[in-house]
Every structure is written in C-alpha cells, then in structure tokens.
Image (tube, rainbow, N blue to C red):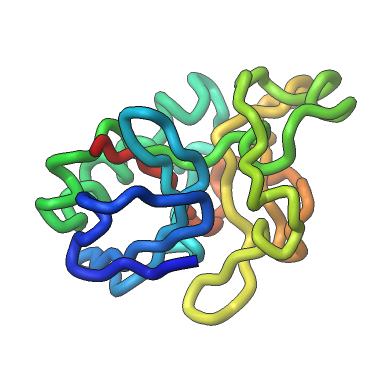
Length: 181
C-alpha cells in the first residue's frame, strides 16, 4: 500500500489499497483508499466518515438516496470542499451501496433495493467496513432502501455489519468518488 501526497497519483498507476490524502476545506484532512481500478480511472472511498448527516429530515425514504437531503448536502456542501485538482477530475460522488460493502446474498435478494454493484475486494474483510468519525466508531449510511418499510435504510453498523435505520437519524457519511486519469 502506498500513500500518495501532492497529487503524484495522477502520473502513477494505482492499485487497490493505495491511498491519497484529501484536505476537505472546513471538514479536515482524510485518507481515501482505491477500491476499484478501471481503464479510465479509480474509485475511492474515504477511510473514515467525513461528517454526520441525516438522509432526510422528514424520516421518509421516498425517492431514495438520489432524491434525499443527504444527496443534496453532498453535492452542494461537501463537493465544493474538495481541492480543485480533485474536483476537476471527479466524475461522481456518492455513498457506497449494499453490494459494494456486502456483496449480494440472501438478505439482499429478499430485502434490499437492487444496486447491481460488486463487492469491493477490501470490504470482504469486516475490519475495513468499520469506520470512525472523530476517532469514534460510527454507523454510516448506504445508498439502498430496504423493502417492506416506509422509512428504513441500510447502514453499516459500528461493528461492520449490516443494520437498518430511520432516514431522519444522523449517521456517518463515508463518501465514494470516481476520478478519471
């Protein structure tokens, strides 16, 4: 594993597990790890939560993540906090899906809004699914809704396992983002 500083990673080939340092203006300094390598770029995930936020103030899961208060906050407040050199190469920013964190299993088949994502290799180790916020283990939102409930969303609990929560509870935000090279 290599930790890249000062944007050297734009000129070098990265591998899964390599990290970059990201200074988010107003939020702090964080590391983000390569989770997926593609021909045109890299998918990163922060190693810890960058903030706490509700999915929706009104406790609804209607519209899912793409129509949520959290989606708006990420795009209007968090995205501008990234250094310009990263923002200029960023194709998208989101939060991880159930598939990316846990893969697809019977629970997914029975209860989770489909995402069609493959599990990140590093997330097969439960320790990598555990994250912190301000040095404390914390739950963090996933982008999937759970079927059969008007307000439940999938989360990763502080032990790295799947759990669920109301959309109006404040949980950790552990963004993923894709950078083209």
